[in-house]
Image 1 (cartoon, rainbow, N blue to C red):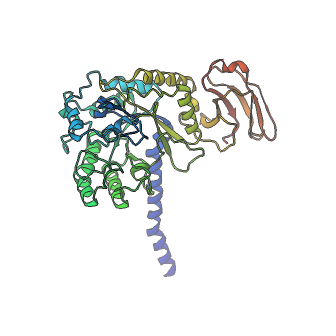
Image 2: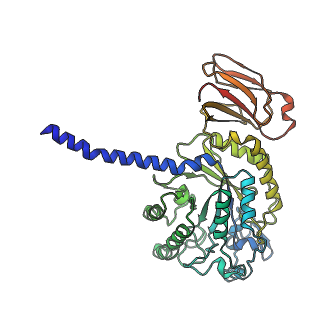
Length: 446
């Protein structure tokens, strides 16, 4: 009898383990594209783009009104104390006659980006799609077109994954939506009304109408109305509506829980180590996210390439932002940088896409990644600073078969010992000032 009972116990308990394994496999499968993609485009665009970072004689940052700390043009309503009536009246002016979804997504693809994320609703509460939940949306502007729908169509044509930023916590238009910390805190009962009447229904709309590959939620280093209960309620909503849709960790920055899909770093934060969970850095080309006509703090394409390879070397992604102008065009400096990064990735993309990190100490400004292609194992060494030699702890037990410049195939001399490898870098390699990549074909993965 004991044997029969034990058999029955094993028989009926085994499916639980199988179910766990199946869930783990399903999670890995839905995350596969994200871990392979490495590089995506973020877009902050809305009514705030019309103000271009200035209002009533003040320009961000303004120490008298903006608390002296934020260039972010999408925050202009609160930072420069724009009256609600003035801000909401911008809905009558928003008419981006030069917007072309196909052109935007072509620029993203040509830049080497594999996915696209846009602000469907930022903190101002304005929806960039045909929302039936709130009339404060783009269909009530002179433009009167569903921008989200057009961008989704363009992404599908170009083969890019796509997702939406949605401000689930802050909403400065709808009663009960959270406000910045320097205002009186919204009562939880009022927030719950906003949560049930606008936030959750609009997220449901976005999923059912557009079937996104990811949702980008936004909280920060402060206590918020996104309690564990609300966090889990939102996660359950997404999971029930879309098994494929990824959820980022800033759904609840202080306590994202175990059911998110990837970690979201702080703005422009770059980890210095490999993280256990998939992750990405949301990053800007200038200080601001939304279009700011007087923010001239443009980062160079080489600098942003280095951010990309830094993240790649640590298993993370790089989500690089563009703040389009109110007329729908990308700023020219942004377009130039996108195309320069795309040109670099055209010849060096093998060191970025579908790679995984290497646990190995490297000299400063040297970044490693690796992959296996058709049974061949490759180690990529991306160099962001002129060096005469590079020494890596790669002993003869992992033999090197080839050592060459990835772009040109130029052979590079090296000397491998039982402890390490010394790679000699030709001085004229740096006549091209961009990040250089050396590829080693090795006998086994590291």
